[in-house]
Each structure stands twice: as structure tokens, then as C-alpha cells.
Length: 261
Image (cartoon, rainbow, N blue to C red; front, top):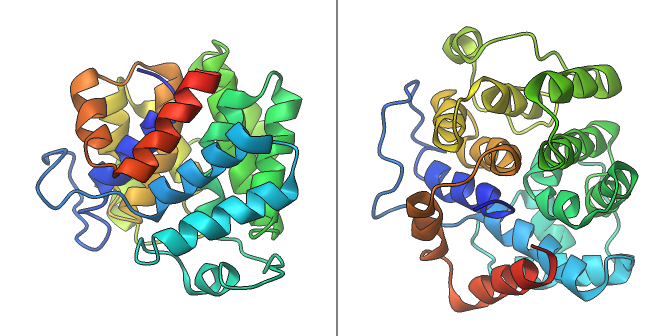
């Protein structure tokens, strides 16, 4: 499988490691505590926006607020929790990685790199309008779109380095010993992209991301969203994630798949 399933798998696999970090790639992908979190909820909120009307900012905001309130305990940041309650919500200057964790549907809907960037910008800017918040979403979306269109890893790496000035000349082994929990785009998106660049399969990419010992579910969602455009997600990994979605989220996933995939 390919598509937004990569972000969903990464989130659910990483969910048991976010507050129980381990600096190893040797772990069980799923266990009885593996659950979807805000990464999956917001990814599917973006997916539902795109199904309904990708040109409408109002529809985008409505979906983010609706799904945020439907799953109030999914693990959102404090500012976002306030935002979903507001009658006339305004962006709040966030530079956090929530913009990148939810962006993957934009890259699958777009018919050009420019459209992917426009949709990614729109998806981020309603909340994460800080330049770093925008950059994280755009870099992630660009990587997904390029991988989807057949670019190799060197081409993706060069594009991200030149356009977004991220330092991708590090290895997972170099990052891991000194890395800690970081929710900023600047401090987590480049590392997530490196996890993709260094991985040799979808599963290996996810293991790289979790092994950093940082914001595991979000970084695995970001890395997984890119990896699922480059590799096939094994059915046994995909189905275990899909089976953990509830009826509402599963229907959004199916609707998006049917319309765009």
C-alpha cells in the first residue's frame, strides 16, 4: 500500500514510545497499547477537507476544529486545544511539528509540485503560521510529492537542502546519542527526513524514527508519510494500523482512498 497510511502507521507504532523513549531499533512494532493519536486525527481531518473542498479555507478550519473536538484527548498542544474552541480562530504563530505531521494528504491530492506546496501552505497557515511551521509542512509535502513522482533519494535530499536549507548531511547513528524530545519543526522535521533517507524499507524508516528517542509518534508519522510514497507499506503493518481506527476515522480514510488513490 501507498499513501497517507504511512503517516497513520508511523503514529500508531510510535504512540507507545513518545513518553517511553528508547535508543534502539529493536522493538515490537505494535502492542496492546498502540493507539492512534493527534497525528492520525489531524491527518484525517486534512484528508476530509480535501475530499470536501480543497480550495476552501473555511472548510479546512471546520474540519480541524470538528475532528479536534471529536477526539479531545488525542494529545494536542495547549494552544491548539484553545484554537479548536474558538468561534473565529486565528493562527497563533506556532513553529511546532503539528503542521508537518498532518500534511501528507496534500501531497497525494496535488497534480503538481506547486499545487502540493500551495495546499501544504494552506493546511499549515491556519494555525502554524510561523515561518518554521510553514517550512516544516512544505518540506515534508515536497518530499512526499517528489517520492510519489519517482524521484530518487539523492534528488529529494538535494531539493530539500537547497529549497529549505535543512541540514541533511547527518546519519541516524550520529543524531541518536544526543537527541532528545523536540516538538519544533526545526528540531524534528530534518531528523525525520534523514530517517527516511537512510532507511532501506518502510519498516526500517519507522524504526529509525522511533529509535531517535524523541517525539516518536510524530517523527514516525512524518518519516512514514514520506516512506509510504517511496516504498510499499507491507500489508501486515498497514492492516494492524487500520484495525485500530474507529468507525469515523476509518470512513474518512476509505473516502480519501476512493477519491484520490
